[in-house]
Length: 171
Image (tube, rainbow, N blue to C red; front, side):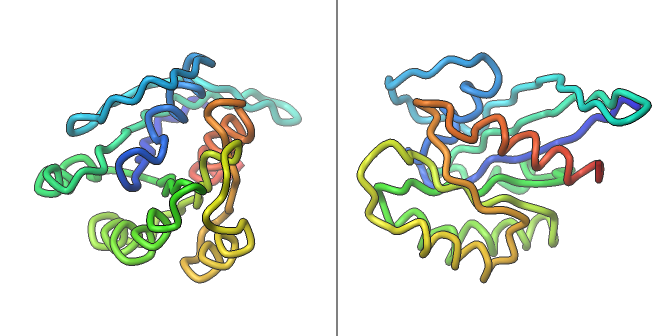
């Protein structure tokens, strides 16, 4: 089978959304921060082998800007999303508070209860929030998974995108 899916990546500005996507798409990491304008869209084809077949997935990744000035455009960017990655920065506890107060309710308002993974990014830096607190938040919000990632080291980056893809097509 060949599937086409749309996944949005949302969270506060500077949490590493673009870095995670670029690490997944190209394997590259840049510490050079540039704020996203509106949205960046990427496409990557991935394959999953099962007993008797190969499933191909063309995954559209919509990296949505976290700045408030893009709030009016957000509903257009969310349209048609089948799943989401909600990204917080382990070095900034506030980014997880914003996931709880703004990003998760915003996702539900625009997309309903689609599957999502709570991403605790920047696992390679000093933490301002414990991984236990993040796991508890993930449970409260009914995330399908909670993963600690690092776009810099690559930790769990591929796993995050493959897990959400499998969830959509139920492999």
